[in-house]
Image (cartoon, rainbow, N blue to C red; front, side):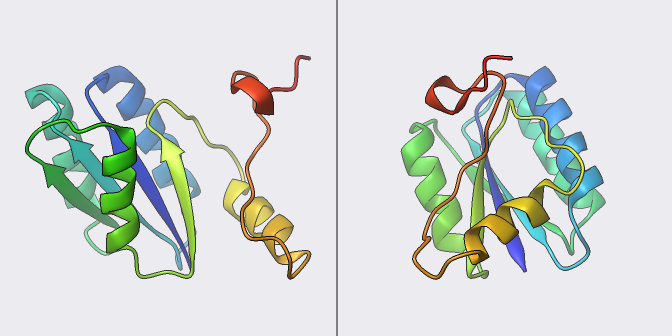
Length: 129
């Protein structure tokens, strides 16, 4: 089981795309926690709808006021029930079997404790072409 923590603060269009891609790619054994970090009404409602649509797979943590990514991530991490947790930015679009690929990488060596994806727009993790 993998639990995906998505930290959200406003940006409803990005959040909608992220959550839609996450819902398409979650495996039956996986789950997600959306941490809404004090978003405005539109984003708050979007998060509530996503969680209500799949109550066995998606939980929602609502923080009354925005406190930043790190505090939101910690709230999500503290709420997890899985040994393997993925932190996902709310503007990320995930595809295919991305969870299984991260899991395979992590399990490939007992000394690995953290893994991260490559990206087309992720700073030091970017693949230029």
